[in-house]
Amino acid sequence: MTQHVFDRLSRRGFLAAAAGSVVALAGCGTTEPSGRGGGRRVPDPVSFLRTSWSTDPFALCSYSFLAPSPLGVDARTRLAAPVGGHLHFAGEATSSEAPATTTGALLSGRRAARDILKTARTGQSVTVVGAGFAGLGCARALTDAGMRVTVLEGRDRTGGRAWTKQIAGAPADMGASWIHSWQGGNPITQLLEQTGGRSYPFDYDSVAGEDKAATAELKPYIEEVNDNDAPDTTAIGDVLPKQSSAALRWAANQAYTQEYGCEPGELSITGLEEGTGGSGGDVLLPDGYDQLIAQVQGDIAVRTGVTVTAVHYDGAGTSLTLASGEQIAADHSVITAPIGVLKAKRIAFYPALPPEKQEAIDALGAGLLDKLWLEFDEVFWDRDVDNLEWFDHDNPGLWAYWVNGHKAFGKPVLLGFNAGAYAHRLAKDTDQQVVASAMNALRAMYP
Image 1 (cartoon, helix red, strand yellow):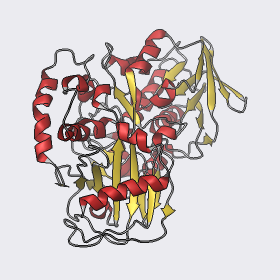
Image 2 (cartoon, helix red, strand yellow; image 1 turned 120 degrees about the horizontal axis):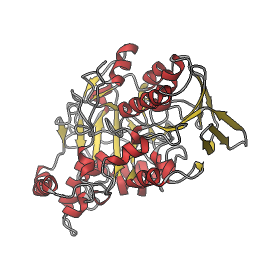
Image 3 (cartoon, helix red, strand yellow; image 1 turned 90 degrees about the vertical axis):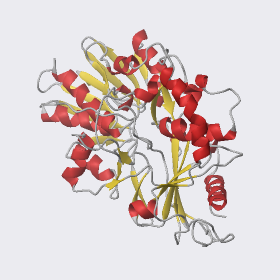
Image 4 (cartoon, rainbow, N blue to C red; image 1 turned 180 degrees about the horizontal axis):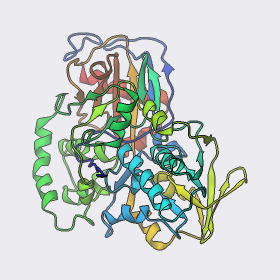
């Protein structure tokens, strides 16, 4: 059977999720007539959804990226390797095929299941920590093979960093939004086909507000990046000038920060080239990602609201300690915690993880990309493009990228993104401050 693998080179999207809720906003104000929006006034939003991924204790980030390190791409291979034959790791951070994507997460869970089944006997017990695509994919494969599986999830829901809520009467994905490289046997696409869900082919070149002069300013540095002879240990920021113009900072934000959830100085050049294949563009899901989670979960039971604080392992098996003090023994355990949780050492390991495993955790970064969904009574922005870009010369990269929900979902909604340092800064603000900041950007975009 051919195994399909997928890259993330074409993606301008993200794998992120965080707590968020629909909040109604009182008072509808207006501004002066808009320009590109066809002369309409820019109203206040009637509701919003906000993510704050860095404050989610079960994630502490949006997705992984490859930091400068002598390990290079081997960091993910090391993180994926079992320890002692009974402790296993999965999740998008462990995926060499499609890091930072739901595809990579699902493939990693299935890979961990195969590793267990190489030595395990039918009927042995496995505890899976985490009920996202990695954990559920692993549990599904093990259950189908006759293993006794217990899935533990700290949240009160399944899905992990794939989470769908509602806004304007339509599904709003708070985490994963796109299927990347969705053709050529992508297992996430196969789930979509099984559910009968819709897909919306996303055109990154369909854009309003792009600053082509700023993009051109970045071009010679991209050539330097491509010619670098030490890509594993060199950061993108090492190639850029220390005193960059506002235009260059904006272009770098669009090219790197929005893509990887980190600043150019944190991302290795090798990190731009991860992934090993795949075909097709990217699609959004007008019916939401939650149906795909339900499809992979099927009848698998999940214990929600339980937090694993410690993992004991030896040559005989594993024992997990929950925050309640409960102990759960098993022949094998699979850890699918995000890289942010591993880096913060929210789970203690006894004995301590071997040096090569800790080195891998240190070599991977915890990227941050947050979302803000805004619902309006009317569409005042460019109706016929997929993307909206904005260059704030005082804050290059703040509210720099938006998805047109009117075109993609048929609703009067906008989806704004902030990544890296700006996302970390906004995470400290109140909901009202974040919405006000976004509205300042939109009113500058459509004066």
